[in-house]
Length: 136
View 1 (cartoon, rainbow, N blue to C red):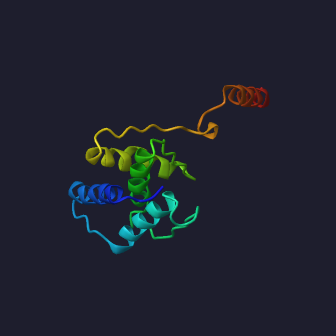
View 2: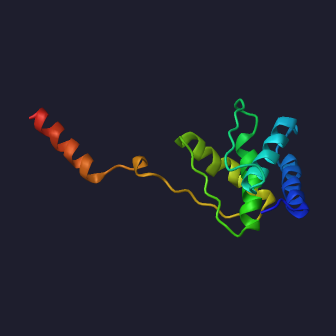
View 3: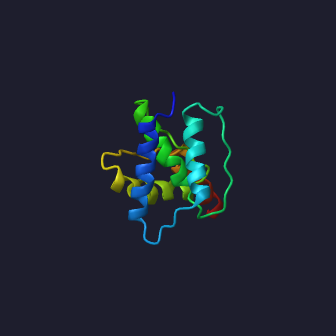
């Protein structure tokens, strides 16, 4: 897939609209570069893998969500974002995606949690039984 002028314009428009939604937002060259790198990678113009390292607060999450959503829509595919920790998952679901929904009104998203996030009733019952046996 090629990054068409229309797709680049859509990504740029969403980034500009984002600036209106965040008080004191300052566009940064590193963030714009990340957006461009992610877009080129997802579009298949630059290899299949991309590693981005940047300090907290630079805007990495929005830098991959904006082009990711745009390209997924263009390709009529679902964008799946997997995180390594619950804190980032919560940030994306409760902060970043609702913010993007303000500029992309028909944006739909959901969260899927791994089994490690839930209590296993069988293990809980077994642990309670062991504790009860020790207490007796």
